[in-house]
Amino acid sequence: MREMIEIIARGVCVRAGKILLCHSKGACNTYLPGGHVELREKAKESLRREIEEELGANVTVGRFLGAVEHTFLQKGEWHCEINLVFELDVHGIDPSSAPDSREDYIEFLWTSLSEIQNSKLEPSILCKLLTSWLEHKEGPERWATTYNSDL
Image (cartoon, helix red, strand yellow):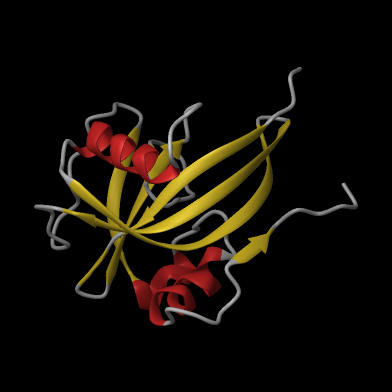
């Protein structure tokens, strides 16, 4: 088994008090839209490319909001990822209906920011951090971790 840390660029798209989330079909958890940062690719460019591939929409990637180190068990294997989170504007989507995915394995949905605790968002620490990150240009902690050194 090859152990590695994945770098993921994720976007926070908020419209009319709702946040755009993504999930794998058949899964109960959700996550922020985005994807892997490729070798020699800037994180903002990765996010732009991933969203354009997944939604077929033009996007504007905004300011860096923060980062979350995340470890989790999936199908019996441990994974570690660093999530780089940016503001995101996806042009031409409306929070009154879920946008169509161009990828067979994922779906998009809108969730009220006030109800994000019920969305099963991973990493779950983002439920606490997102509002603070969005409201404050400076100040709040911009790094979080779910890493448990006792594992």
